[in-house]
Length: 130
Ligand SMILES: [Zn+2]
Image (cartoon, rainbow, N blue to C red):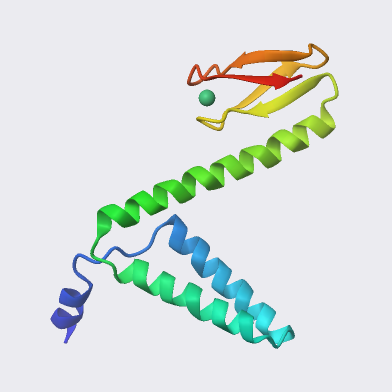
């Protein structure tokens, strides 16, 4: 029995950051469904559950890793955008931008007009109004 179970799970993808996020989303949907009776919410719950289960049990590890890498990149871009906005609200002398390529937060002095910014991390150039 133990060996059959081991053989079943052998070569399966398992858990990653995207699946952890999907699980977190599931928990939120369950809590929401306690307060809101909505058919669309139930459908959404099952869709996320199927996706979570499919990714965990998948044997196509390479594709799952690519999806996870895209998710991590998007998540880091999102958190850096929020951080840059928070810094823009606190620090009035500087303006903070997020590099479109590597998501590095870049600080430039305010009131310089439209300038070309070179990312110190990846050397990507982009123009913004400071
Ligand atoms: Zn960069």
